[in-house]
Image (cartoon, rainbow, N blue to C red):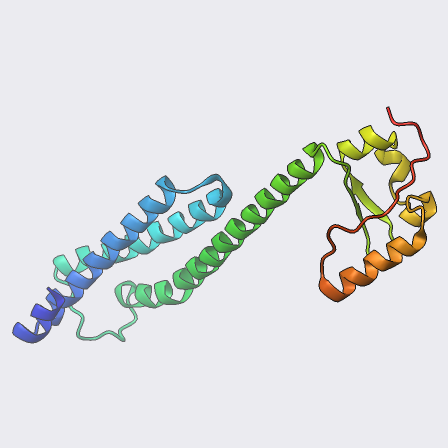
Length: 203
């Protein structure tokens, strides 16, 4: 239709009205989709963007009705609300929805990272095998799972903030040094046999 009023019948009035109506419809449909299809992870940012697109649609709905009412577009630089509002929309509304879309992407990524972290934490805690997470540099214990407390008798409070060297978990400290060396060289260590020491009677 825009091409028709551009090449077949060069009528800027009809072309501008049709363009405004199209932009209004697209904006309302976008707002509807954002509101009805949002997930819990992006609820706040989706609602924000929906409001911005509603405002965008209302601006071009106003212009559409003004065109229908016969408002002329020849003098686009005259200081009227009809001429000023598109510039306001281009500067302010576009900036707001750009910010909103970036915020929505960040919320989605943060939610996905949080879900992965929770899944890994659940796997770590419910694993029947003993597992302990330590810092590579000094061996300070960051976390232990329930399997570890059941097997060794230690509690999280017993080990929190202490190092494996301090608690004497390694029978031979050289084993830890070798594991650290392998981790630094390869980034992983598997099937390494070492003797661990339990100083408490397992429950």
